[in-house]
Amino acid sequence: MYPHERSLVKRLEKRPFALIGVNSDQNREALKPILEKEKITWRSFWNGGSIGGPISTAWKVQGWPTIYVLDGTGTIRAREVRGEAMDRVVDTLLAELENSKK
Amino acid sequence: MYRSVIWGLVLLVPLPAAWAREEKKADDNGTEIKGKLSPDDPRDKVQAKSPHKVHTMKWKIGESYQIDLVSRDFDAFLRLEDSAGKQLALDDDSGGMLNARIVFAVPRDDTYRIIATSLDGKAGNYTLTVRGASKAEAALGKVQADFQKALQSAQQKFVKAATEAEKEKIRDQFFEDAASYLERYLKVARDFPGDPAGAKARVQANQQLSMLGNVGSPAVAKTLRNLVEKSADKSIQNQASLVLAKVLRNQSEKAYENKDPKAPELFQEATKILRNLADKSTDKSIQAQAGLTLGEVLRGQYEKAYERKDPKAPEAYQEAENTLAEMSKKAEGNFVLANQFKNALFELQKLSVGKPAMEIEAEDLDGKKFKLSDYRGKVVVIDFWGNW
View 1 (spheres, each protein chain N blue to C red):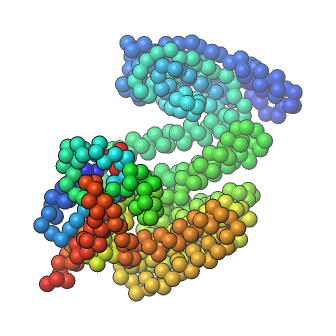
View 2 (view 1 turned 45 degrees about the vertical axis):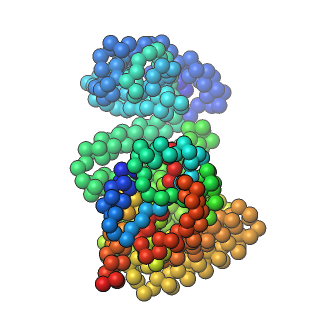
View 3 (view 1 turned 60 degrees about the horizontal axis):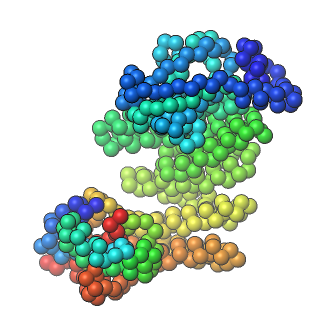
């Protein structure tokens, strides 16, 4: 999981792209060394220390990880995509966004 | 019955109940062998990392046996071969816990080789029990053994397959075979009503059925159609209809991907079956499952239409929304089900492709507040995660 996300973030660092986590671990302090060790540089919302926290509840999350992909307007464009399929969606949406600016 | 079996008689007449009871005792007194797998024992030819021991049995045609391998020291694995070393059956966990069981109907007079080995490569003490089996147990055992063999051979082919396409082909073939095992399990259940082995066969058939819901093969659809039309068992019939609808939906998704013109037709049939079950099924559980599946299917259809920029996408959305709203109203008396429909409707309205993402406003891991909408103008992947 982490290596794939790391390489995606690295590959797209100069593009209009962001990976946003919603983290459901119990302890924020205990997580810090892991962020460092795994080089998790992307930002995460704090789900209140529980998988039943307010954000995952509002989004009806039932399994982890759960992925949503949004375009530049904040519209959901894909869900339940992983790995290469996720990369493909992201690349398509980036091309769409960058073309619309030209 | 078992005593007669042990005496080598071929049984053609059913025995009176009193006899059957007496025989039950005889089967409790089957042969029990205490054995030990030592780490130095030769490796087994199938479980290549595990030591094995061979026990030979002279059996006659028409007899049936249940073989149990029980161990506290290792994950028991049983194999059965004929005198020429041809593998006839294998099993890992059918005996409950990690214990192995094979039920075997003897096809010809021979000296058979029971191979006691382990799945995990470990050694230790074991108990091997061999007792006569009833006709029902033997019939069920035969189907189970054939299914285990098919599963093992499919797994081996799957691991060796080089491409995704090959893997998919092996998987499809396996599920097509699984559909035929379903019919064989149901036959055992029909042939031995009231027998525990018959009841077990029915449970197996049900498991086999629900496994087929993830498949999109026309051959599986055909088997299911056959069951829906001909099965005398109402509950199997209902279950088969529900699974058939799922298979047709999967087929239609594949057809859409391949731009096959049959896609809408398959989809229509799937939704028609689901609607029918959701409206009219007398089985409450089937009715609820069909309704929820219908909601999922319609939502998927809308999302697919949106993704391919199909002008019919708004229409598909409306159909999904109306259906879910209607069903959640109908389910009002049932709190749990009504809630499930309400959730499904919410997911359609707020969490589907083509819908604006809900705002998130919360602290980050350093305690600093931020909002999802801060990232407007960028492509965003939201990843619900945890370090576990």
